[in-house]
Image 1 (tube, rainbow, N blue to C red):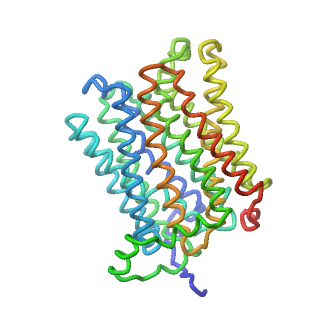
Image 2: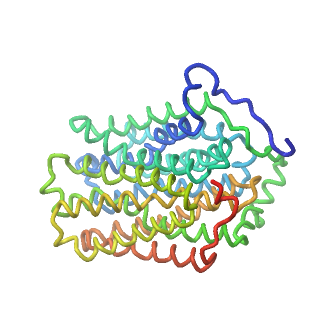
Image 3: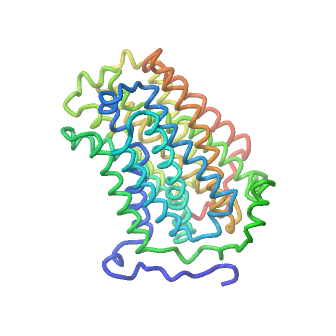
Length: 421
């Protein structure tokens, strides 16, 4: 097997034999990433309890992003992502994330303590999302585009899930709604524990503590992947996509409540409509994954990024005049396309870099991408208080940069290895 270690997966035990590894990883991703926007789903309860504003909710979201950024940097620069089994990192992170999310629900006394707990949740999510991608590659590297699409679809549903829980438990205190995400994260850890790692992982590289410390203060090898044009192009597209994605998800409840949509569709409520707009992104990911098997990941990623940017432009120009039904259609299309490009850019990145550093490469790409979201989330949260839904224009530079960066770097070239996925 050369440099590859065949791990003995736990999959054949009990009833898990009836599900494919990718399905199990995707389900764990769905449950684990429900921690991400649990605070946003409780915005109304937090407003009553702590008198928080839209800007404060933006800070709570950015606390998670900040923790995620630090976590992915540690994974990438400290060689953690490629020194330890991805399943072990996922399990520990999911359990720790459940703990800190529970602390946020039951022990926060105000915005300051809430920010600390949300930061720790973000730190733990760094071991869930990138390691989920690595687990996918460890099981089915030959169809990374379609498999990652399924994974990101579950991330999208996980993001929307707290809004759905809030709609179902509308009469419950917000603490219980948030705590439900902790229970789901524990279940995610259990699924990955029973599954284990796939047979296609490189043998972990053993380094001394001294060599690892020295790498943290020099240029790590992982940064060399940015010299590969195909990886750099995928990264540019991903970074533009990230400017738009999480800022859009963060303000979906505000867009619903700030337009005619809520007044004429009040039966569902803000949480119900928010869940629908975000959750439909899972369908966009699945469709994109199917298309990538015929067209390749590059065209699908570019098409989705162009479509989401067009939705942002149409919303900016016509949100005040569109009938509520067409406004809902627009937001649903936007929700479906805004995330559909993410797994395809990740598949392109994974295909372009050496397999032995794929975990670190994806982690550093995530880290930079989520650093970008700090700016866009803070900017649009503050701007929304001044201009309302018209603030969406701030999302437009992301798709434009992503499209230009990808096209000018590769001029439409798709790596041969990715074309087979």
